[in-house]
Picture 1 (cartoon, rainbow, N blue to C red):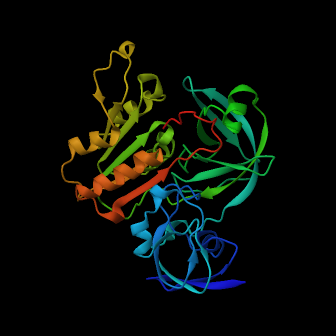
Picture 2 (cartoon, rainbow, N blue to C red):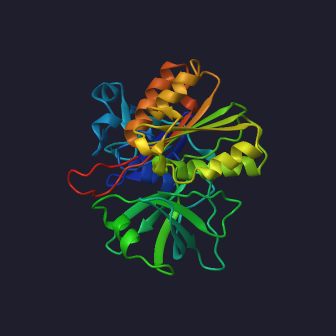
Length: 345
């Protein structure tokens, strides 16, 4: 059985089978609602159910509180329709023209960037290119039918190869394979692009980028895109990590800072080691932003990293005046880590 879903305020509507999520059906119909993780962890797809009934699905409690549910909110990446439904959600119109595709790819290069971060450069067939927006992600399709999502770290103008950054997750099936067994020239399949985390070019607001760990990857693509196109808006990158070795590509933002007067780079370590001899900023990366900006009302923020960091930044930045619609995020979640493993940002 299928139901009719109507999006307000656009009045766009589409058919949604009862066994598919509202988000999936919207994307299939060409309407790109905001989303990030697609598994109920980040809250990026949150919107209001104005009319009708839904099955809320499985989600993490921190992404949708009981009070929010009582107020009519839902996570559209999990919710399924039980009747005709009217929802309130903004639409990401810039990505509507890009339809995800399943494509083969070859591992052109495999390079260790740090003790637990690997760079993969993926080559599509010679007659193929993937159209994407800087900051979007792709799904790697595994042989057992599972998927692993990784942000694209390159900008669209440099699309000969697709660049992804993988952090080793102890007990993680795919990342342990990449680090210990995968060889260059290996063949995989991927699907993409996905995601609503990309640069809003129709704004003149100064931009603050907040990256936690490998959350730097999509932000790298966005910044390279902005610099390539000569965007003159002020850009500040706050990159948070535990120790100095976790800032795995520091020379790059330093080069951006030297070459572009409108770009600034502020690294932040939460647990610097004695041997790091760290003299820079310490503590939580989102707090460094708040320490520097008592009033965020005129800014636009792009935030990517662990769900806890993204969620906390979202709430506290709003408390310092950041408008709700000027916060864009991509929260990284991890599949099948070993029991008791500490999942890094």
